[in-house]
Length: 182
Image (cartoon, rainbow, N blue to C red; front, side, top):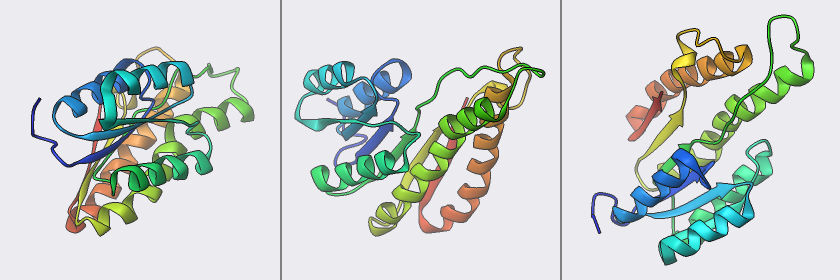
């Protein structure tokens, strides 16, 4: 077991598979306690059992601010605070130039961008109480270069990347690092 994250508490959205699952495994192996948020109760519970007492699963949909707040509150209540937020939840979105509509626009922006904004909103007060923290936002190369995929996905990820830059300059002086990964 590593010690780089000893005594740190992390929340990982989209934590039940893929990048989120691998991140939860790594964080626990480095000494962190993690709250894994996701929609798949079966996968989330199995992962938390596999990782042991340092992990807690919360069934949450990042398209709900109430679920986001409950996830953050679970980390604070179960493990005593919050040091790391990994906004990882997301997925593909539909939409070509001529077939987008209000519903697809709203869905893409809520899933991929609003969830990041609201996660940060609810995490920052707890990080400020601890004197700092780290926020990691999962963006995409599609944010800066056309990947011939979903237009709305690219637009939402561009919003995540830009928002990360702005928030990072405002939270840096408070000891909270904010980065986007692609």
